[in-house]
Length: 476
Image (cartoon, rainbow, N blue to C red; front, side, top):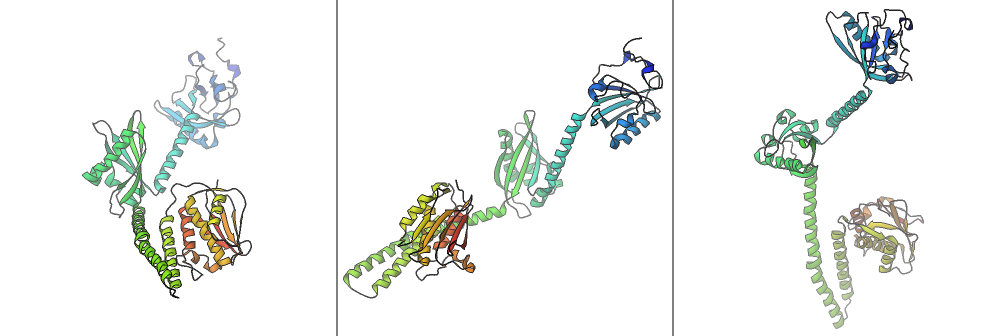
């Protein structure tokens, strides 16, 4: 007897195993012979590599015992279908088979309804675990994709790109629900149509030109466009990403966001800034020039005569000059700090303390702290806070500057605390608790802090005075 042919006494009861010379015993696929009742009669040598069992370990066992319980009935139903088939039939089924370490492996089995002369059914099985994992990953990605399309607030649109002609052409193939909501254009109105067919020759032509740039550059691009729609939206921030298949751009994925309100606010801010700049120019030139003349004339008049009216006039003119100066500071220093630079906090504090008439006041600052900001504008913050402390706390007040956290520092004084009910209103323009104050000092402090992207709040100081806390600071 050929050594490759198993002896019948090596198997359990049943019909003899056929001559296996005809079977590809060296195949990486597993060949299994089953009785009609599902008893395993033969496993090819590939079982060792596939399932980890010895070739004869499962012979005589019921195949159903090795099928995952969740898949078992489905496999048995397929096997029964083969047995009752009236014509030649092939069944393919995917399921999980138990392996030697008691885990399960995804396999695909193919069987014919025609049994061998001995009455066995031939089953061909192969490992599909990699394919199943890939399919699972693709299904997960598809579910994420569907979730993204249904939940994202931005409008998504998909364009088919035809590059067969001299110039690429485009057709909308799909949009998400948010696109329909923000534009008022239904998917049925846009699917399968070109930009010019949907939006007209002029507007559609401009849109197609942007799409062509994306195809030509073969990279993502972002731009603003003006596309008026029935919902009232007009201005859009649009991003395009090309999908490259082979060596050609086959599709474009677009994301568009309604920025109509933002554009309106930006235009309003630009208009306000232009008005503020114009006002600052008037203050700087048209008021300061005659003010200087008046101050000069008062000085000359004081040389010619002695009058009790001259000191009040001088004080009034000096106050006007202070108001003009602080108004200009408000107009110019409250703009966003676009290019902050490293600033030595200790050096700024020392400089500002020297610029203010501090009398017998004391300054406490300990440590080395560098912050990102605009030094000239920071000087306005500290000089105003130092003056404010001395004006309200007296000549013997103590001022302390200190870092208080990873992104904050404070300036506090030992003067009288600001009442809790007044801690917001003191930042309003014109608010002053002294007769000679302009009411702009703390407003300037807050505007410059906000221009840096910081927040400023007032709390009670450690010694019972007032503490100004600046947070959101970029401290290095």
